[in-house]
Length: 452
Image (cartoon, rainbow, N blue to C red; front, side, top):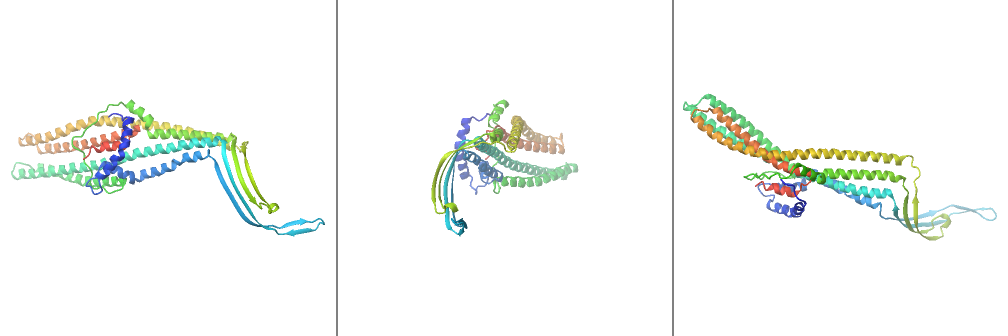
């Protein structure tokens, strides 16, 4: 399995919309089976976990706009209109007080503008907002990868449950036929009651397995239905002639790709950047702030002394704000932010370690699955030959009934393990790309080619 090139990823990303749309046309709701591409398309719209992640991203991306707003002009307007009645006592020249009760309308209209010129806090907020928005995008990518793997896992789990049911049913049918043969031989005096009881015991056990597998099929389908948001009746089966892609890339190559592209690590790096800007915001509490201010105001009877006057004031200038002492809150906020930055760095290192473990696990799973599939292919072929040889040996008196029962059980186990190994290979390939950060919808399209 080779690492996808960036050019191929971009080309597939441009084409994926058309491929998925075509998949929806080819797999209409009335179709007999739900394909993997159709299941993925349905999960994009209906998976509640992914929908929650989308809404979280929509909220997080607004942090960039919020941060940028602190560097842009702030324009506001104020208008006030009130009816006033005053009690005014004035003393005339003879010293006699004179009480009057003037009534007037007071109006005030003002438009003001404030543009930051030097504001370290606003600059830190802007950089922090960009980091937080990028963090939200990386987290969404993580959830998108998880959703792809979740759909593929639920789909293959449902198929494996159906495969187990088919194998268990076939084994049960084989025991039924073998029991009939035992009965005929016993009736002819050539068989034994022990053979009949041995076969009946295996038949009863197989019947119990069939009932269990039916329940498993219903549970697996219900799980898939919960992910894609629609009922599941039939699924596409694996195509005959399962193909295995050669593993051409080393683990170190996958590791380099993961360090650059894994969205969890990318999100962690943005979290560290946002935490660093929080430190800058705390330190900015010591720095002066310089703003350009301008205003235009019109007043009419603003006070009782000027209730018969109108005025227009135009103002333009700068405003300097110098912090002196804030009770120690600035230093405390800076120390708190510094601790948060150290925590973010530790979280990033923990994420890096977890991703590397997951990457190695899935890389090893892909490698081992290839060898396991080849071995189990041979085991199934040998098991089929063993049954035929055992049947011939029983006729010749060399083998006995229990040998045939054991041969059938061995074949059933090999067929089940082979089916599981194939699905594990497909899932390990997806999870390897997810851990490396290069998983996208084109990989679902590629995986879908393994199914009818």
